[in-house]
Image 1: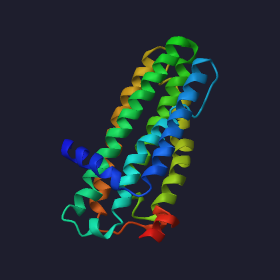
Image 2: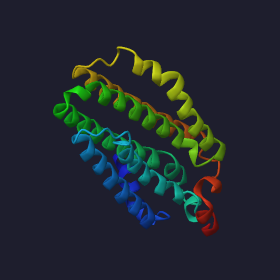
Image 3: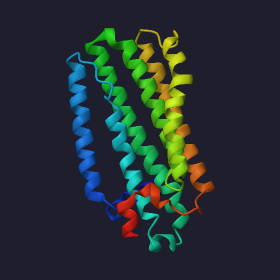
Length: 221
């Protein structure tokens, strides 16, 4: 796992659109910090934390662009570059981003105790979102229909599963209301990462979809 992470970090500089993705990383991080500052000021920002999790997906996205390059496809390490390396990278960056989000929500609750239930619900939403995106990442870049299924499943999951939980007394309004979803979030993200790896192994022989990678990258290949 550590070796896969090291290899992934070394390969990031060879990915397509590295400069564009770095700009996105800076913009998303700045936007997340702004949302956090507004939350501390007492202004509710639904996007708080979401941008940070979006940042966590960028390294894995860069690595997947390498899997459409002929020299990589001919490499003996092809399977690893399409399975364990991006899976470990996505899992580690998502966990790191999620833990930062948890710390941010804890700070918000310490300053605004009346926002405990709101912060807990926000964590539940973000952790489910992160787990679902992770799980789909294993096949997302191989199939354009999978991309569409992911978008529709996220909205459906929120409607039929998430809302009943958020309306229940499961979360509560004490500090435990923040601890419980935080711990569950770690488990969900680990499960999402495991499913990402499993799906990537299952579909690794399927070529990367140029539709998913985008028109500009498709012209370059």
